Amino acid sequence: MRRQALAAAIMAMTLSTSTLAADLWQVYQDAVQQDPELAIERTRLDQAQARVSEATSRLLPSINATADWSNTSDNVNDDTNNLALSLSAEQVLFSGPAWYARSAAQQAFALAEAQFRDAEQNLLLRTAEAYFNVLRAEDNLSALQAEEQAIQRQLDQVREQYEVGLIAITDVLEAQAAYDGVHAARIGAEGSLLISYEALEQLTGQSYPQLHVLVDHTPVTPPTPNTRESWIEMALNNNLALQSAAAGVRTAQEALRAERSGHLPSVALYASHRNNSEATPQGVDTTTVVGVRAQLELYGGGRTSAQIAASSSGLEEAGFSEELARRQVLQQTRSLFTQVNTDVLTVQAQAQAIRSAESALEATRIGYEVGTRNIVDVLNAERAVWAKQRDYDAARYNYLVNQLRLKRAAGSLNRQDLQDLNRWLIAETSGQN
Image: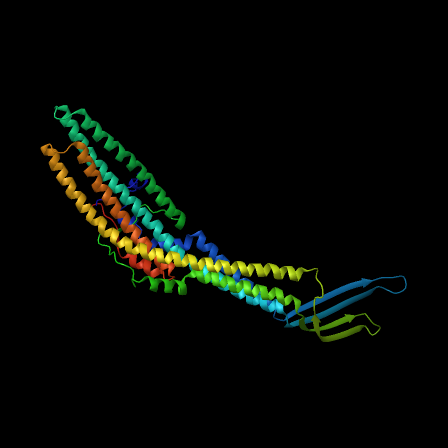
């Protein structure tokens, strides 16, 4: 099917299509660099990594150096300058809150990592959805433009027949009403196309005057493997949203352990060395101290118990979230598996429907010429052909997107899937049908 100029903004372009058209892989690479959602998840991953380092630092030695200078003046002695230099160090021997806080931070990093990987998969899907939404809108507009031209020719014919007295004014009015309807639909399709381009631009931060189009012989095959149980097993093992939920449970468990350990004593080894000049008649006082410090909170106003209660509720919430995620993954995987198989049959049925509609149109035109059909029959048959064409185009895009959605539900969607799809996209030329 011939694709025509899609909107006034695109028609204004004077450069060749081959230099302007972008393919799916190029659009995805732009999205990786510019998509704000992925950038947010990347910064969250960096923050989680920094929190692991922060939590680990509480278990490592701490060393502090201090310098203190003072001047004392009275009416008995001369001015006295005092300089004290000290060096202290401390190493945690046992601290439940610090130990479990680091473990919780590590689990939080695993959660952020799973969420980032999930965001990467989501970007693959969102890019494909936005890309094919443009092609869907483009095909819809092309079909409506062709339908408008066909009905315009039909309208011109009935006007000529009316002017020579061969038909009644009713036929002209019917043809005019059909033309007005498709004309309005075509205007709406132009707006939808521009909106779809803007959605793609929001994703990538780039403007694309033209995209590579899908070839007519793109394969439409059932999912592999073609068993529901296999996809469910893959989803339960690999779905990143489910992995994120599981990491959330582990994070909440470690956070609860950290709060409960607040009732335990903490033990640290410490040492200090201090030089204090002019502090004694000898002029210098040197002190070295080494020891072990144990600390146990006897009463803190109920703070630790309240924190334990809050963390217990947090763990319970994480458990419910994991179960909810599991149920959602199961439902999505089952539904998408069924949908992809349905899409395969739908594409085949829509292709046959086009052929049937074209045969019906030809028969209706012959009937109109011999007087057994009226103009309304012809217009309805004409519009039916283009409606089936639009349904066929939509079915193909539904199949491609739902196939990617199924892979994402199973946790197997990757860049190679987009590259495989990209092989079925070509730069359109002005003479392509």
